[in-house]
Image 1 (cartoon, rainbow, N blue to C red):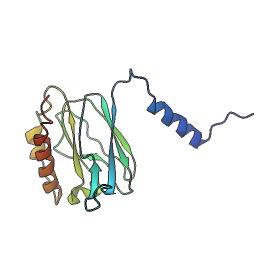
Image 2 (image 1 turned 120 degrees about the vertical axis):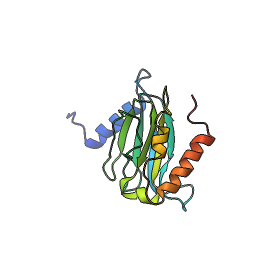
Image 3 (image 1 turned 90 degrees about the vertical axis):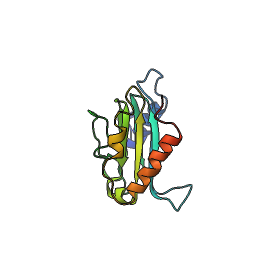
Length: 162
């Protein structure tokens, strides 16, 4: 009897382990999906759902490419000082672990101009320190309008208060 694992079996076992990870793991995982069309409102095209997430230091955001042609990449000028930028490959999932409190702007590189942008807020002391720098970062096309909506939603929901 052979004990070789097929790739499919290995992936299933790996997924099962990740879903049932021990409670002593360093952080939680939040999922952000990348869509061509919002499943709830087909008029909204090229979107991250949710487009704003709030996490704790050590948490991971898993950007999932539901539809092909998208990536997640940090936006220049929209990271806390000393934070590491990221750039995922097109049509590939990417997991980003956030350690430093602050506001992280992100985008789909090919669809930034049509407004495919979002924000990760990492809780902790100084989480609003880069707010003004992030708000003043250069935006293009529809991303300008979407960022106005994002800033209004963050304020409306009090997401920058501890």
